[in-house]
Length: 479
Image 1: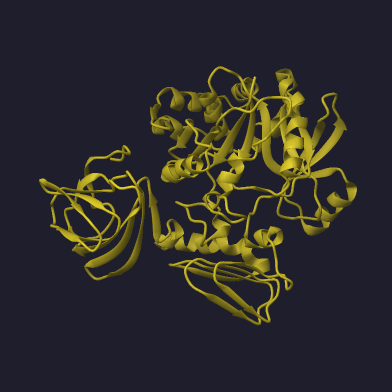
Image 2: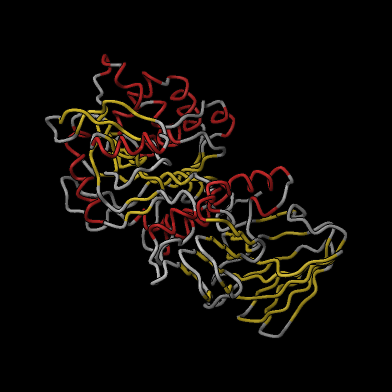
């Protein structure tokens, strides 16, 4: 039997806007250290020497919108997964885990279920707690991991634990919603409460048994979606219509809080305390808490200058940011949006995102720089009837064979070598060479070289939207 990691990567991270966007959420960002949060999560069992061997690759459940970035981030760190399950729509964590269990097959491993967007600063403490939870999981329990609190936090749910069990875990007395400040202090003082981490462990068969009994409609919809699904390279696609019928609920509400009242199941819910430098990085103030600071309590990422400023966090992506006379502030600069907030009000950033969505502003969902399976593009300028893009194509990659009804394009190579299909001709372009793609011409751009290809594309026409693409052939299976 193996310990199989399952990474749930479906969150949107709206309170970390403008860095986190709907199509590029916080788990894909390197907020702490050099690795993205997804990459760090995938490596969290590296060197594990506990009671069970670790499976060679994680099972990942993610949104279809950012599947290629997810696959590439895992591949680039040597943790590529052949089981990336794509959710056509979000249905919360209980259905997501059920799909992962179905992807695990019939081997019945012990599953370690981890959100992709959490931080663990103490890897040894994390692995020690995971190993301590294995006996309970092997015995048929569903294990959650509670964070030992170090302050009276009002932003987390709590778990009140009871007596110690024979397997070394603790019984769960109750789950508690996010408390007010006075109640949170009382929880801390009592020593009987843990923060609810969102980490779980159980055998695959245990989870399916619990789902069949406690959430039969959810289990049936997931099974139907899985049965009608298909494999697409590294991706496991489930049937959209069947999955749309699935109820939406979290692991906590759907299963964990119902176990105590379902003794006939014979599945216990239990908790293992964990001290591992955990944070869910739910908002910018939480990131400031765990980040390295200068002598004045300031945190800087990017080109940042501080003068007479304290306890301030600044992320600068595109430009230099200078701060004078600031206290307890958050500034996040991106090419298309800037956030300025009081540090104690950063939970309210989600209301800005809601307003952007209501106004159908692109800044709610996507960055100016858009990642694609072949590389990326950045819309660097635009005006009436024209748009300028910087396009980078990875070595050996190519775009789809396509045409546009409403725009023509000019391509100028600034780095590398381009293989261009333009109508019935295919030819190479080197640096400082260019070509013109007339409206309606079938065309393709490819990189036959060993270094990234960079071009400047100037589009002109009556309509410049990304939906004006007719694809005739595509390596990545896009319609």
